[in-house]
Image (cartoon, rainbow, N blue to C red; front, side):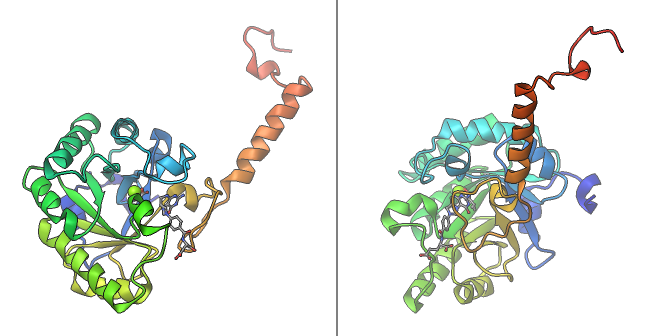
Length: 274
Ligand SMILES: Nc1nc(=O)c2c([nH]1)NC[C@@H]1CN(c3ccc(C(=O)N[C@@H](CCC(=O)O)C(=O)O)cc3)CN21
Ligand SMILES: CC(C)C(=O)C(=O)O
Ligand SMILES: [Mg+2]
């Protein structure tokens, strides 16, 4: 068992203070059962809008709404006592104005009991991050490959491929830090560019397809355990293959039903013991 098992609840301030220290471990979770499996082990749990794709089978994260994020956020919070819980703000519920972002973030904090929200963007979101931070909402930033911008980026494409793009990413990262983010997800950024971002940051960077010298790493848990098989970004490492195990259990159940091996004496009520 992890050394974290007996330790207290991790907050966004604890995450912020981990800059340059032991790497921060993040994973997504969307359900109570998955949150229970990881709560004692990880430092933070992200209720990611990737659930649009992993749970709901959509092609992007653009279609998920605030009520759905709150529903899953609440389930994860109820199953968590140790890890810091961060919930993604969904596309369309924060980009219009700082006020819109605050109303959405406040609903997420009030109705889920989570610790912080995450939003995607750079300089254009700095005013919003400052507005939220000043009003009691801890914000995790997210730059680089920002999936909510799929329709303007033309796909899930690696970022930071030329010097102009690298300078824009550094400016975006610094603006998120200056606006008050407690940590910054850097996604799908070429390694050399990610290293340059890390060099200028004084809040923790959380890499996903970025670089090993980020202050932490996050992956989608469904990718990590082989529960999601529709596609596999290069940055995903599969640590388990649960799908064959799931299929095997389902095949055995189906076969036993069809041959009337199930239910046997152990699984019915009131049959006299032989
Ligand atoms: N299951 C899952 N895992 C994720 O990591 C994830 C989601 N869903 N949904 C939301 C976003 C979408 N993400 C993605 C999706 C695809 C690629 C991908 O195919 N990348 C290519 C690079 C393409 C290029 O650079 O042009 C790759 O080969 O990894 C990357 C990130 C990351 N996020
Ligand atoms: C991949 C992570 C960073 C995310 O934003 C999500 O799961 O929605
Ligand atoms: Mg997300």
